[in-house]
Length: 406
Image (tube, rainbow, N blue to C red):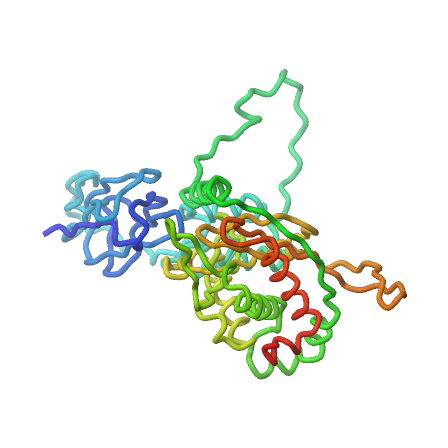
């Protein structure tokens, strides 16, 4: 009896997905709980596992096609490859006993078809997939494997320079352009960013913060903090805690508009923007006001790793009340972040740069960072927005305020 392969429930707001990759071909053996197909939604990538052992009998939806939740993707048949619909028919073999084949050798990662996101990452960094240890199921190469190699700085040897050939006229137009279909995630990012511009009355206010005290605190407690908590003391915990202090004083920045109502949130689920090979995602720190500095750092690190590995769940990405985006990790000195609907505020961090400033009538060189707060002017007045940014600045320039909730 055949077992159907269907699109699982993908989340309350997700009704459709794209078939990104089939891990098996028709006629191949399938084991129970083995990944069969990868689906890409506008938020996360989901693997659909086999509900029974047998043979992949039929693929109804090819790669690149869109499918609705509950749709039939294919089926698993009982028995060997002869049960598969598309499997080639076998001819009668001679009865003479054939010699036993040698034990199969494990294929290097590059022999298997790579997922589109993994393929892009390999090509962008000019890596040899065969030289990268694969940690995925059945020896598959994952995004995490490639990113680990990128971070280590190891790259494939450069190919030998081709021999010059005689010019053959202008290059064809096809060689100068490449057309690639947008992923569902990229399309969803574009839709949400445009939605924010079309819906919210978005303005941005700026300030700058002297990061001397934060740098001193991180330097002073770095080793002790890491030994005790097993995680590095970064900047994000200071910014999350400073933002919560400000949001408690000015609740409109932690609110949202729902029709004719303003919904004030008495909880603080802070989204932290993370760049991935597929695009920008914003995983959420639940109950960030209840987390310690170590709790914030551990949660941010765990969510960031899940994002880079493509393992974020729908619940990791929904329900934030305020967002923090750190463009400084890419070298950005100043930007105007776009709201993450339906939120009413987003804080933009930027690169720390030493600049001369006047303190007590004297010029001193200090590590300075520009801060940007974009807000929805429909419910947040300019006075509130500026006050929020000033409050964050005060907390960062005197971190003891955060500790004492002052």
